[in-house]
Amino acid sequence: MSYSLNTTIINAQSDQKPKNAVILCHGYGGNGKDISILANYWKNYLKDTVFICPDAPEICAVSPSGFQWFDLLDENKEQILSKSLIAEMKLNKFIDEVKNNYQLAANKIVMCGFSQGCMIALQTSLKRVDKLKGVIGYSGKIINKEHLAKNINSRPSIFLMHGDKDEVVPISFLLEAKEFFSNNSYEISTAIFKNCEHRIPQEGSSLGLEFIKKNLYS
Image (cartoon, rainbow, N blue to C red; front, side, top):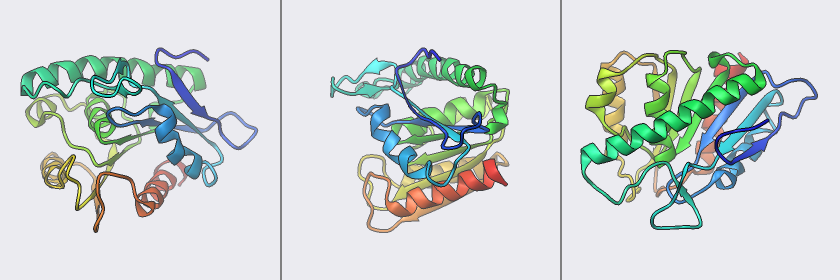
């Protein structure tokens, strides 16, 4: 199987063809192997799921050993949106490759993202015409609320999680996103972790697992 992005794949535990897939998008300066740690935990409980962890398309501007979905050094709002749209196009192509490679319908796919990976997963998933089953977002935000509000095409289930001590992406962005999704008639769940900084705690892994079970296995 070939992909347009370098990819770490955690195969389904069953001998059968995967019945569903989780695509995991890493954070700024990370890579697919980083976030595959989460997939390696989940795989033990989701036997029919393939986990696909792409490297973002660009070398990270501040950490050349890692990758970025789009450049964050320029703080101009419009330029960040413009760069994110390029990343969105590449992630959309990748999602289509996953669908084709495993012969899966969109409603058999859950997106998951951490930090910048959460940002691009949210924007991409909601703008797709084919409705993905759900989105799990850790420690992220909506890139541009005005743009997203004008371009909503589907309504996957959404679960956003955040640490209350996050100084990289402050908790206020979770509250803004929750309000945005509620105002736009989304099924939205949230969790806030006490004394947690910019990371995915064990509780977050467990809650993500339960979300996937509910959406892909029930």
